[in-house]
Image (cartoon, rainbow, N blue to C red; front, side):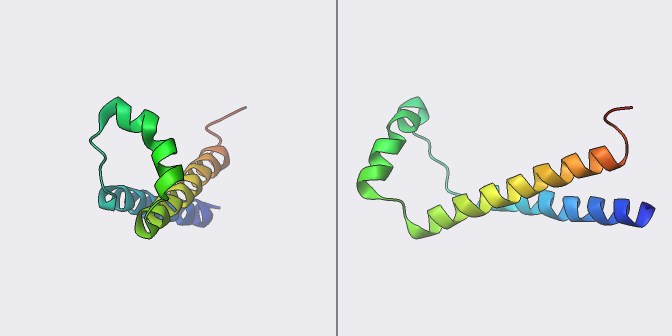
Length: 82
């Protein structure tokens, strides 16, 4: 059982470092609150760039996997519940 725990922790560490790396690669948008409000209209009109869209999808996938692995590790180590 400890082998599975260590394997899950190692995979979680890899996904955590990957998540940090992929977020660091993305371009920052320094437009403030107005950029956040107007993003959907602008993106719908112009469309997103291919690279930025792929990075966004990859970030979502890695973040979801990291969250799921974190929940699995927490449940298997009996940190939640009785």
